[in-house]
Each structure stands twice: as C-alpha cells, then as structure tokens.
Length: 365
Ligand code: GH3
Ligand code: MG
Ligand code: MG
Image (cartoon, rainbow, N blue to C red; front, side, top):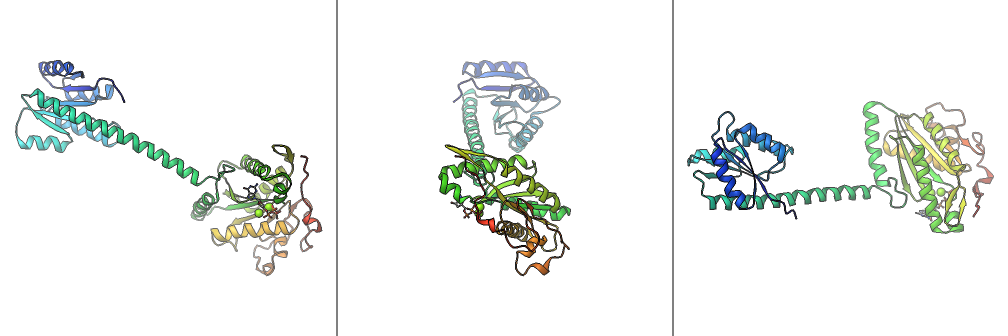
C-alpha cells in the first residue's frame, strides 16, 4: 500500500478559486498543485501525473472540455494512467453536465462549490482509482504468468530446448513462410546412437545429463534463425529456414562430427556418443507439405540407422532409395551419387554394415 499524500491538480483561471480549494484540500491532507489555464494543466499532468483533477470548464483559450478530451485520449492510448477528472461548472444546466461527461469527465460539481460534497466526490473517485490501479497491476501479473505458462508449455523440461509441440508449431509457420516466399527449408532429424546403453551402463541420470549436453551442443551450432528442439526421447529436430538440401547436409555433417568428437560428462564419469541424421528439404518433387517433409527426414534417419549409424543420410539420395523398398523408382531429382557421409559410409546399394550393431561409443567412466 502506498501512503504518500494524494496529489490533486486544481485548474481554474481565477487564482483566488485555486487558493480557496488549495487551503481546503490541503487541510484534508491532500497535496495540491494549481494551473491557471488548459495548457498549463496539460503540462502539469505530464510533469507530476496527479491522482485527480478538479477542472474548471470556462477558461480562456483552451476550455475544460478540450482539456478533458485530450487527457482521456491519452489515457485510452495508454500514454497516461487513469486520472479521474471532476468538472467544476458554474452553470447548473443539464447540457453542460452532459457535454462534460461526454467529453470524458468522471464527475462534475457545480459552483459555488459545496465543500462537503466535493470531498465526498473526491474520495469516491480516488477509491475507484485505487481499485483501477490494483486491477491493472493484477492484469499485468496475469499476463506475465500467462507468458511464462506459454513458455513452459513449449519448452522441454529436461533439456530446456523447444519441445515437440513447439517444433510442430514453428514448422507450420516456417513452412507457410517458405511457400509464400518461395524459399527453401530443411529439416535435420538427429538421433543419438545406442542411447539405451547409456542408461543401461551408467544409469538414467547419466542419460539425462547426456541429453542436456547434447541439446546444448546442437543449439550452439545452430544459427539464430534455426529452431532446435527435442522431438522425443533421444531424438532432436532442427528446422533450418532458407536452407537448401546441400547446405543442410553439410551442416548436419558438421554437427555429426562435433558430436562424435565430444566427450559428455555426467556425475561419475564421461563418455562419447555418435548420432545419426536424416536430412530432407523443400522444394523437392516428393515433398508436398510439412508432414511429408517431416516424414522424409524421419525416413532418411531410419536409413542412417539401418546402414550403420554415425552418419548423415539425405532424403531421396541413391543410398536412401537403395535402402527404402519401393522408393527406388520414385526418385525424381536424378540423384545418382552417394550422399551418405560419415564413418563407414557405404557405397550405393551395398548391404548395411555388419558393424551396425556394435556400440559406437567409448565409455571412460
Ligand atoms: P538407436 O541407435 O537405434 O537409436 O538405439 P537407441 O538405444 O538410441 O534407441 P532406442 O529407441 O532403443 O532407445 C532409446 C532410449 O532412450 C530408451 C529410453 O529409455 C531412452 N530415453 C528416452 N528418453 C529419455 C530421457 O528423458 N532420459 C533418459 N535417461 N533416457 C531416455
Ligand atoms: Mg537412438
Ligand atoms: Mg530414438
């Protein structure tokens, strides 16, 4: 609760009226500032932001109606907080009151002023202002909480990168964007090789540590505009906007090398791991929508696993087709060269490496 004195701005072109009200209001514990014309009133509001304004209607140059209109326009534009305005009018005419209220005044009082009545109106409006401020603060709090909740709902709890829901939302947006602007887009689906054995050999907590470190490794390599997230278990997806297939494969290969050369630490030891990647891009004759793009990256990852792990396989490459039954003749990009890269890359059509089942890591725990 604030305990400072409430500030009241008294606007009147007659100095003695200001002084009369000042004496009365100050005696009641208010802090009073005076302004003798409309412009001076607006300036005072900018300077001191009073809690309430007592505004004379009839003033030379800018009258009270104009002042209140300007103040309320600023409040509506959130340039000023809510400042209650009581119009003081000498005319006890209904039109005058209606005009004042229409202009945005919150209340009015007729001259000569009955001070008890004025005080009651001032108090009632200040109460409303206090409630209004509390409401605004609560609104702000709720909106911040809402933002935090949204952030949590889109973040993977363990690794703190985006979760699958967020990735799907981003992919949807980025896909639409790429279609609209005829820009390429690529996906790199990464899966840690033989991750289950990390848990089996070192415990689930060690597995968790590796996942966290792995996520940070990917994030460190990605550009600002790329999205990096955990698609599930030990599978991570990178969305690379504005990136063609060749560049995405080169990037994935760099990532693969980085991971293969990295030593992961966990409480009680260190270990090395490799990963496999499937890469797919649009435009591509067989990629019609965001779902088929995802499937393409996933299929390529599957082939990377099938053909020995610790490698990058691009969708629709010769190797891909050789290892994807029924897809060989569907290739339309004329791909003929092997695009598998990485340790033990096979030649097109060669059988999956017999070493595929060996554990591709050295535990040094
Ligand atoms: P592959 O090379 O074929 O990908 O083999 P893999 O062992 O990595 O794959 P598999 O799908 O057989 O096993 C994945 C393991 O990942 C099994 C699961 O217990 C583990 N895993 C998934 N999520 C988490 C997690 O949040 N923390 C830990 N510690 N392990 C997880
Ligand atoms: Mg795995
Ligand atoms: Mg997996």
